[in-house]
Length: 253
Image (cartoon, rainbow, N blue to C red; front, side):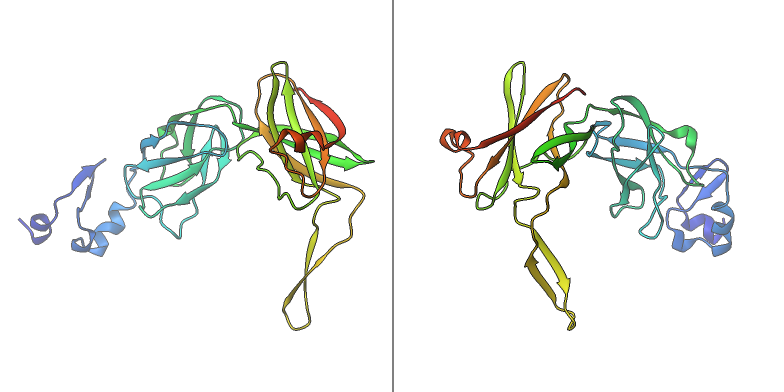
């Protein structure tokens, strides 16, 4: 038995012997082994289901990525953000904004077997993004789509806010607030001649485009918008009664 045969404790894959310790293998041996026909396969996806914005970890049966290798992941044929998390055979993938239903997760890599894609279940998105325009003193809906992300938290109470209630046939479902898109605190950062940033308040603008996240309900719902002055506590019934009604919009997913 040769020295290499006595030191290596690997395995055979599609006719190519894989050394357990690569430092023991001659460089020329791995130049041949790396060029074999073997393509990486997915061993495990955990969790095997997720809604847009959530992440899942994919483990391959051999190292395929490292910190210097771009990772091109696909869920349902749609590019998905992916990142290497330390182990060369484990990749974290974020579910893109695609419709719910059964699909597959795969990678675009010359050494990955495209036929070895793993099943993945896309769950309904937890949130719905509404892109809105403030014009003429009221809110107007521009676009809406289901997507991942956190629901909007309450804005700082010491500034003018735009509050909103989400209601449907069951009543009030969700309430939130954000800094008023045209009357809230607007800050601009400029670079001075000495390279130091200078922060100052910008003048209010008459129009603005902004977005909010609300629960992704299956049926139509209404958003009612209110203006809330600085200092008003929107967590109390008295504070909610002090809001000034602006307008309402109906959303039909």
